[in-house]
Image (tube, rainbow, N blue to C red; front, side, top):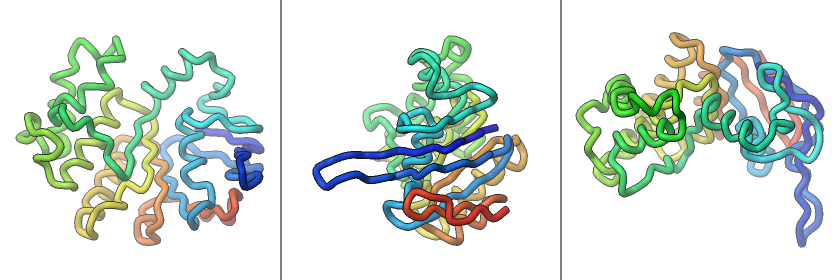
Length: 224
């Protein structure tokens, strides 16, 4: 469970002050599928990065399973990012010179608990996502839909509790988008994984069992 209290993120630059998140308070239950929509600059990605331990807020608190994330020492914060959270991004961020299998194995190499059976675990994840015959292929040898499925497999590598997805269907056509959304929905329905997904698509947002909309760094609504 996430408990967010009075969370703000302020950037100061040449053109003045930007309040990317403005005093947000929110609870996200374990096992939820939360979708976050809003216009450009509304704070969607800033919120997602804060949840992932990648963007320290200016003020407020972010608690995950009774731990204040940003009060953790840096090694514990890195452990939170590596073990509790999996990231799925619009740009896939696969390592171009590593095979699909090696890309999925990569997060496990930094986790002593998973390192010993990294190859077998990675093969199992590729099989789960219908890519068992693509393990030796480089990213450039895969379709965009296959690349995103590899990215999802990599996000699952350390068996995280939470998947944070930032526009995961943004580069995909409607059919491939539906395929990826169904994979995320299945992870939520069958494995109880918490999914928090930023999307610009109203159709994609409907996959969530809770829909949030941000405007100017504030929650405009929180429809369950």
